Length: 195
Image (cartoon, rainbow, N blue to C red; front, side, top):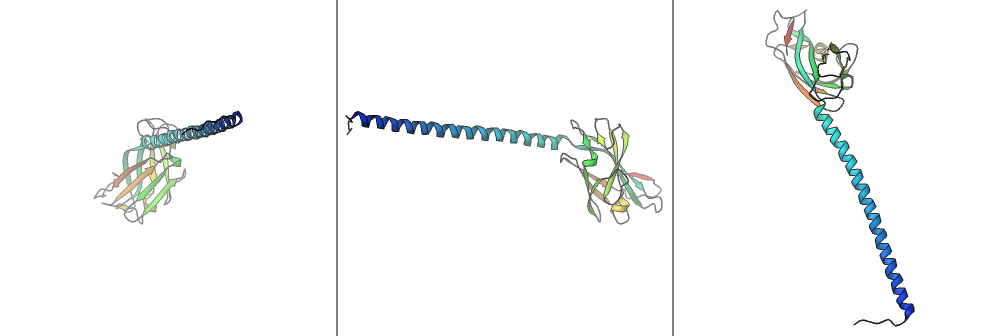
């Protein structure tokens, strides 16, 4: 069953062969361990970055405090400017509205507005400082900015009585806040209305 090797030269060759196989196994195991450690480190850093991004998208939001519309003084039957008063959500970092967008989905128009420090028009919104000193950045929980959109330029003739528009504000972090602006059924004898 077992073959005995009596020749000393042959016994040494079997030992060297076993040693070579053992060293090869140790090297393969070391390489595999190195690959596993590198993969674990990569996955850990990727997971941490994904967690931070997800946290920023959830916490770095804008809250709409109030909304009103300016009634067109010429015809008295349309809202020509939509104004939102906004602030940081609780626990949010600084929010730069110049890097934000607003998606407008209205009665006859769907468009995306970007920031312009000049005037609001069919493609841009602008901001005005209400409280704080960092227009267009919300730095503190008490800061308030007025977001101005020119609905008369965005839609055909402005927003008419009873119409509504969905506004989705997206910050530079990717967090979204939706707001439905509803024009009252009657605009008669009013200069401004709650939306």
